Image (cartoon, rainbow, N blue to C red; front, side, top):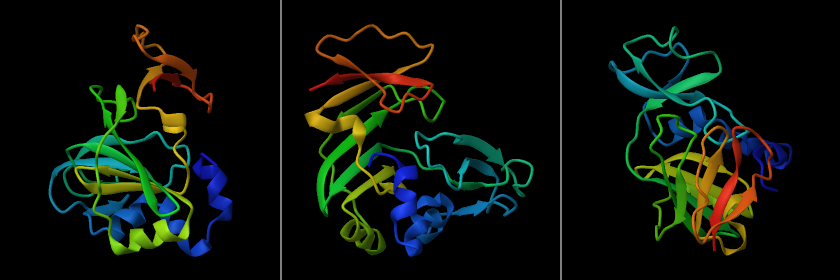
Length: 200
């Protein structure tokens, strides 16, 4: 299984918090709150849906919030302190880390990455996340600035078959076919991502 919506009906009901990023953020000790909870101080925060089974960072944006978040954060969304640094995605299979990839993005659109590449990276994982890695055969952990932002209980379809680097192809954004890469359509067939140039 490659998608969160396929996994959701099958996991232990006591682990459904994994899909709620606001609960995950609170368990990790980050500054966060759902719509209506005031921020600790005025500033820029990331605002995201509490639950997003589609992935790809859909619905995420950076907003300036002064105090109360009612007029900035929609119902079903939450605010969280903004992290900076490397965006890393780590894959575990049967408790063993098999891959880490780093995403690079120039666009202000938080879902539109320009490139992902395999890197040497060993994350620091809290004990309660280790318990999830032990419990489920496939776990993906995403981090920004060494801080966990998402957990998925699925395989990573983008780096299957020994792929080393991918360049996403977005609808309306022309990219010259890079040398040494092959084009692979996005198996989800969802816009705006059309597919990838992949290097093996």
